[in-house]
Amino acid sequence: MYILDKARHHILLASVFSEYQRRDFSIDCVLENSMLDILVDDFDQPSIFLLQNGPFQLLAGDAQHQDAAKLIAKLPIGSTLMPSSQDWLDKVNEHESLTLNPYQRYSLDHRQLSSAKLTALSLPQENKFVTEKIVLEQISFDTAQRIKKSADFSYHLQNFTDADDFIERGLGFAAIDYSVKSNLDGIEQGKLVGIASSALVCNAGIEINIMVLPTHRGKSLATQLATQLIKTVLLNNKIPHWDAANEASSQLAQKLGYQLLEQYQVHRVM
Image (cartoon, rainbow, N blue to C red; front, side, top):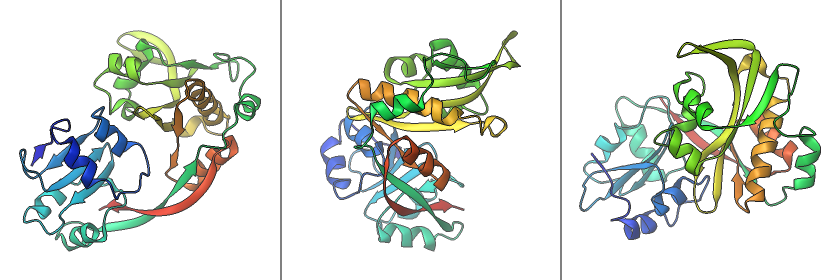
């Protein structure tokens, strides 16, 4: 398998993905050649495609191709296969060592978001303490470096080459608990306990990625992180796209002003 030269095959990619429903900004990123890799069967004349967005995978092209099984073997165990054609789903189910477990995700509409509602839900002033010890702040270069090294949050930067790339193109907010000391490179710092950031970046906007450590849930951190991120994106006249992985994420998005469009089925690769 080969990594596709997206710029060289732009017209082909546009055709291949033209009939795919956009559940997130991954196809947009590929067509803009801004991020994400695509595995293909042939570097010069590709016929089958595996779009990879961290744990999210998308199969396209001719599912009956002679090398389809080789491409399917590249699906990471535990990854999520986003909606692909029935031919591809059948082909994966035929694979001797893989099975697909269906589950539901939630499509949300950003168009009814209200800056006034977000402001009402957010703290009186940005970069202020949520509690006496937990503070929210926009992700700086130093914080991005910490995130890159974090076992809990490194995936927030998985589509960026490094901290510099994230600061140049990405956006995010961090919750830091200064009552819990974290020793990194010999320096004691507050512990990263929550992140809301741009998982994907394209011309239209960002794909929201949000996570709070289990030890710090129930403190309104997810709400505060999300409102700061969404407000900033809207101020820049971009789309803060939110595709929810579970009902709790969907409910939080709806609390912030998103409208539920539908549930849709994806598959865990086992």
